[in-house]
Length: 504
Image 1 (cartoon, helix red, strand yellow):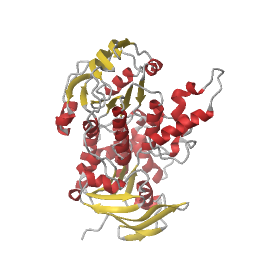
Image 2 (spheres, rainbow, N blue to C red; image 1 turned 180 degrees about the vertical axis):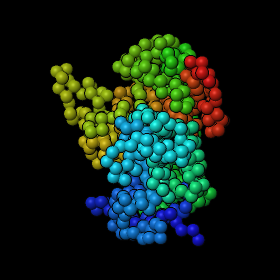
Image 3 (spheres, rainbow, N blue to C red; image 1 turned 120 degrees about the horizontal axis):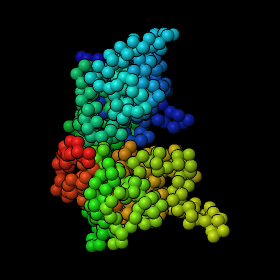
Image 4 (cartoon, one colour; image 1 turned 135 degrees about the horizontal axis):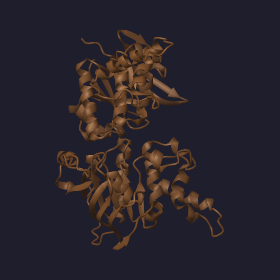
């Protein structure tokens, strides 16, 4: 019988009386690709920190390399082959790739003087383990998300890793980058290195994982093989809820479009975009990173004014030469990165919601009506089911799904005619994802015109009544999601097309 790389048994951990882990058991075999799944707040992060030695469990045992521990230190975890690659990758952005890869070895050896030749040799050896081609002198801060991740993986393999824990590794990756990551994980498997893949993305975990452990509210729900689950059961075990998987069909059949775009273009970003959108519709615009989809969203919101073409709202030509202009014309925009572009994290939930209509709470003399603003914020918290005991709490106390609802509330408070959402469910768990989709369908049923911009193929197929595909800065296809499969849409997104600069 092959020994497990790690076995945690009946692990319990509480913080200030709150039970974060309640009897978790998890076993991982050499070379196994094991998925740990659960909603935000389920205990995934706490379990990772127990395994990596950051937190000591209150009870239970950890078994590695024939030894049993009641708790680990980080050094003990690393020496037993555990490496964690967190969402932020824990790299030094101001250092070069070479320095990031070699620094641990230099520190471990207690070296006083820098030997650049030795450090370069160490770094070359590290990237060779995953066949990673990168400029060792490049500053890590200038790299793409995928490249930073590969630096982190290369560094992890330098310490004779037997188990690599990847915490939400695909959150900011494109489909192509995800495919490249999966190839590396399979290569690690062939070398006997196990992977604990922490994620809630259904399509990805079913594609790569050999076994699932699902936890909810700090407790184990099920450990099973992929063939024992389907997507519906997976979602149920994670959330304890059953979801409607029906496709979106508009309830309204308005004839006149609220938004018409003709021949729109921005130099170097996209060209000749023509589309229309009616009240009650949810239009999907999809494409890979660099397809022009985000630039189109920014142009429709006035943040990247068009160089040519025409935009008409309710039949009238408009010039969207700035964000204020777009808002004045009834266009709202939920950005791709809610943390840096959509929210004031240190401010209260209420102030984040009402900031977009703050002028409406001021009298002619400029006196701010706090009571009215508070009432408006509380109404949106209730309508969008934002999970908070008090709207005065800071936004950074909430989960990603609830933060996204606050961004939604902020723009809905402006009473828009058109709402554009760029990656509306990036980084949120399954339950929140379904809730956001339900909210968008309800808004469409009330007559709002919605545009979802996303490279999440199941998201646009299930929640849009039309999908336009962007590739190399152009609209290359419009499909009916009711008769279009995931594979067909993925092929349209990735098809090799000459870009705006004449390159393939």
